[in-house]
Length: 256
Image (cartoon, rainbow, N blue to C red):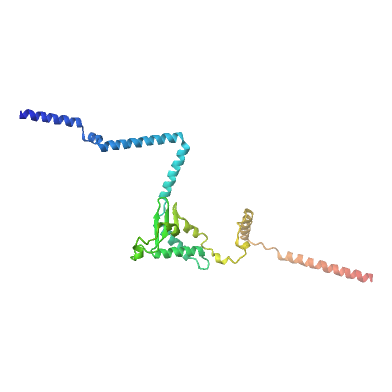
């Protein structure tokens, strides 16, 4: 009896294992497997509908793909805090090579303010994914003062637009680049001039061509004419009026 019971037990266990299948099949038929299969099916259906929609409306699909590509390009070229410090140091070195008398007051003042905030540890950097912001705070990040650590009296985020110093986008810091335009021109030297002299108009193509022609002619060798011929011509010009005066004097003497 015991042997027959063990044989039946073994046969029933083998049949159960056969019905259950392999480990991979059991994993597929589990709850996690069913959920993954349904998720993959949903993604497959979404991709199929996107391809069919792109075929039906190519212009709309092109706009969407262009926006996605532009966002990825902005994300890839988004400048970081190291690039801002590099740009700041480069601009400060460029200004240091100029005399204070010819520096632009706008460029010099902006760069000096940024350098001061950087030395004080008050510059902050925030990345927005496709763009970046540089702003300033009241205290250094490593300061142990109560005002710097207490969140109840900290500056609210609503005042962030007033503290923004620069905007980084597509690999450039736009405010810094704008402030550095004409950094080697001191506006104070020209503010007392009349408006007609302050405003400059780009030369026309004709004037540019004439200036280039004159510049090219200035490099040509100077051709000296014969001085003897020149002196003979001057002598003849001086003798002609003298002879006329003598003839008039002789005629007057004969008539008298």
